[in-house]
Image (cartoon, rainbow, N blue to C red; front, side, top):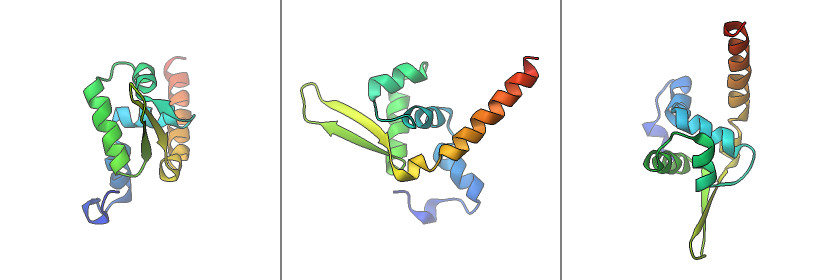
Length: 109
């Protein structure tokens, strides 16, 4: 988990530090519906590279937002799911979706 002393003093900046990347928000969006494998996330997100997706997932795991589960199979199966802390971001993503829908309605009118 990220140490408190490394976080910005501003709570909004803290939130942006944790999820302010386009890919992290899309990872959250996909994991809110349930556990996903790496390939499912990559396919759903689209243009993200494997390296960037791996980095983002590791950062989110270190921050305590998701759990990475590795199953001892051949080939190994890895699944990602949100922690309680990660799920607590749902109202923020819901608000972003609502705002985006409103904006699209205005711009596309």
